[in-house]
Image 1 (cartoon, protein in one colour):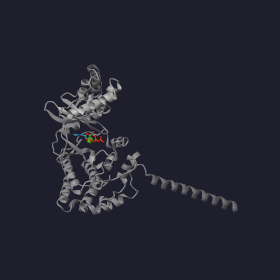
Image 2 (cartoon, rainbow, N blue to C red; image 1 turned 120 degrees about the vertical axis):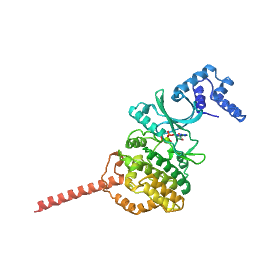
Image 3 (cartoon, rainbow, N blue to C red; image 1 turned 60 degrees about the vertical axis):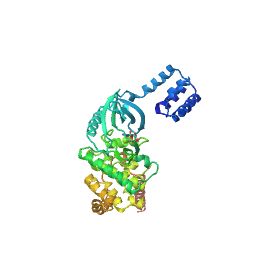
Image 4 (tube, rainbow, N blue to C red; image 1 turned 180 degrees about the horizontal axis):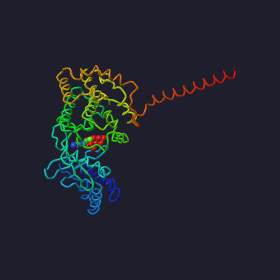
Length: 410
Ligand SMILES: Nc1ncnc2c1ncn2[C@@H]1O[C@H](COP(=O)(O)OP(=O)(O)OP(=O)(O)O)[C@@H](O)[C@H]1O
Ligand SMILES: [Mg+2]
């Protein structure tokens, strides 16, 4: 089987001119044949057996690869393969030697490992997360430091993320989405009751096991900085666009509470049942602008087969003003379970009518928070402003001309 290390090794031996590309390809064929006979061989073994590299050449290359991989030095763990990487870190599959079990290890990049403020928060939140225990939360196991790198050890989840499905343009059926959203809401209820707010609920952070159990990942992984900065940093990268972030996090408010998680979960629910993110725009800051100011297109306007109940619940979850959202995840769960039982989501239903009015009021352009950057006016608004200024200028010049002409003629 081709592993990460093997493919790097294959490139390096050619690069260093120890052997040729066609010799490496020949070795891959040998490995494939042996694998069919249930005799797994690494590329290193095959290269040596064919006599294409010497033992000392191989040792030099392997050492170079090892030196480039800081994580092999985490004591007590054997790194097996890279599982993936996100905007912030890299996740590896590893074997925890003491307990002989497979785990996942998230390794922070040097940039974050060298930031003492971040590291303190990383340990504090990591410890808090390790106290949680819930089948719908990826279990935090340990935090530590090795070779100057800080890492977070967690339960290994064999499966996929909700993002994997959505990125293949797969929208979920209402029933399937509801099943996942209920499980994640249960995870959040557990965490909130113990004082932990996730702050980054999104499809990439929800993993689905092969048995269909949904697990919320990155619980207790301290965000890089204040949410607004984190969102803006994320916005600057190719990876993340803030499709699910709450308006209060965009505004950089300091007292972020459980309602931010309800908003993000609502955003994810919206995406799952409509196949579209709640707000789309050409730049991340324009997306954030819409979270703050644009009225949500009701999900049942996009997917007309959606039940009224689900549409109402999503709109309440995603109310721009957090006072209008659910007062707790417990109430949200009651509504979700009602829908699952084919009944009306009573809490959303009660909130819904007044909420529609509030949303209409919020649409008026008199909002008084104008923050820099993400809160910038849209091009249309700017265009209108410019037009008014030019017209006013022209009017003033005309009046002046009339006055001058009149005074001359008199
Ligand atoms: N506990 C785990 N078990 C198995 N795979 C995992 C686990 N945690 C993360 N992964 C995999 O590693 C990938 C990278 O995770 P990471 O949290 O670093 O980034 P992300 O959540 O995908 O994206 P972003 O950095 O934008 O938030 C995930 O997409 C997932 O496929
Ligand atoms: Mg993640």
